[in-house]
Image 1 (cartoon, rainbow over the protein chains, first blue to last red):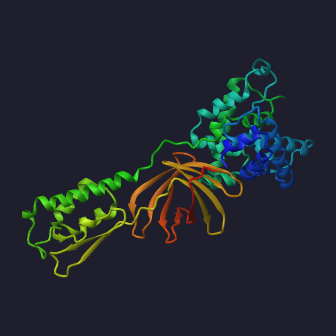
Image 2 (spheres, rainbow over the protein chains, first blue to last red):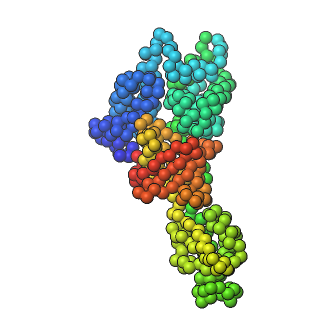
Image 3 (tube, rainbow over the protein chains, first blue to last red):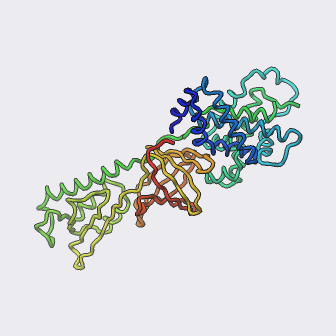
Length: 188
Length: 231
């Protein structure tokens, strides 16, 4: 079933839309959640929550790409759950490593932030991503959007893990410089 | 700002960036190849019809399919590929030849037999044009030797693939190299995720209608066409 047909079901408030969505994108959403949570039960619950969220959001929203619409929902829900599970201490799992890596992008400073905080971080990151060569951008998003392990990314792109790590490190450095130019600093 | 804010902000990446199938079209269309082959054949046939008086004595002097290999060698000027044809022609040199099936030659599928008449042993040199294994528009299921499944969608210039289990995937463009290998495979380059990527593959027909793809790392996948579905 095409996305447009599924979305039409949502607009008709036909509950089969949820089943169709689960069938088409359930595994995809699960893998996104599982990359973050590494807990199949939690990930399944995230998928269910994502489907419910989609049901609540469509309409009025009308996604152009249902798959990516769901991906963002699943990712956010999984990350919320991850934070809840790891509120007290950060464990040594893959997601913790992803967050540690991102921490490198944020320079430490006690001031100036207020001056720039109104800037839209989302827009700044999108603009930054558009400056990257395509491969670097995709590797970056595999790692920091989908939270995929470096090993999997290396396999997907036919590179060795060291190569991917180097690409990620350079991209993080560029992002850090970009954020600094835009006035984003790490809270101390 | 915390790293978690950054992670969340990355989660708001524009969909076109998440979904990009990248890549300018770089695939060589096989249509010009077929046309060039057909054009070459037309030139050859035309030469035979127009200049029969120039054809030296042959074992079948009454046969209009006769020609000198000098004429055939001219094909090289009209087509740079497929490689197999060019190589074979250069081996034949400038001897007189007889091409029995030339009127019926179908570049997509025929065995093109060149009989060297100047040679007492009448060696038969064959140039084989298998139907070039190419992907049709639509969806394929790819299964590797361990049973892992991926799904591929092909369009004019490439497509995208997804892992059968996770749904994760990438876009790619596909460039067919104009090479017919002796084992019936065609070489191709997949530019996966980026034009900078060059993942080499050999594509072959299987008797059951599926395609066999041998990747540069030695992995093999059987591609089964599922139809024109986008999903």
